[in-house]
Image 1 (cartoon, rainbow, N blue to C red):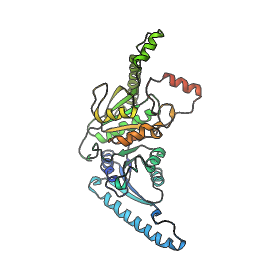
Image 2 (cartoon, rainbow, N blue to C red):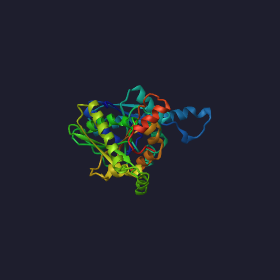
Image 3 (cartoon, helix red, strand yellow):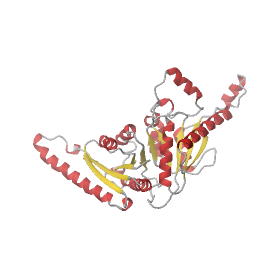
Image 4 (cartoon, rainbow, N blue to C red):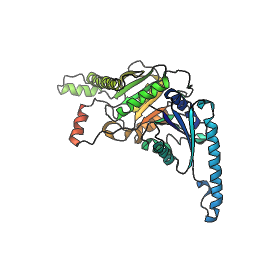
Length: 344
């Protein structure tokens, strides 16, 4: 349950787009919001002698005072009306301070804009967001700059939310399932939301099928691939329902053919394009690790392209890695996995 919500702000209207979402969650869960602003040191002033230190301290103190007044104003703003809201101001390295607050305040969810001050892609593609997402032990919800989905949520008005959760057959990717269901339920309440479990598969080409036939393999590889992935997604759905028997979220699934993973996920989520007939989604959910436990979502091409090109908010969930296994055991697990696409 997302009850303690952290919203980092930098003074820009872009970063403030995270406030309605945070307020909606806090309203539904009877939780609280912590607004944080980190004032960076003063690199723009260059290197000074020791005699300049008092003047630099005065400038920093003024910046801290301004930041405190700004957060107080945001805490009293309309989106947070009636929400238990606190503020905190720090100076130093932005990402490190955010992560320290996550730990010290036992935060459940970070809600932050994908863009920061002046509109450059500093949150989603810059070092701050990469460090926060990569090292955060809790889910991070990124709000898009130009995306309209979820940006107009009101704390008091129900709005069914639909999320796309991409799976690749690994337990790492499945870490995102429960947070996705909890987030969608909270954002949708009292309406019923929906999460769509999706696995992307690369189906064999006609030439590959002819090769199988030439070798005497009497199996419809395409149908076998789709069937095996469908079995996996149905099993994942049933496991989630057993884990959350009282969930108010509808859980659907689909297997989709793809060539380019990021492009296919964006088309599915934003436009509902795919083999089956789908409705567009409000949110994309992904884990930080994919097949084999490698850090492929965050450090690979797929996540970077999703964050750069998709207009939808993204919930990034840190994977919980299973206990270490012997190489042979890992290989056996891989052989049992459906013929899906890894997150690389």
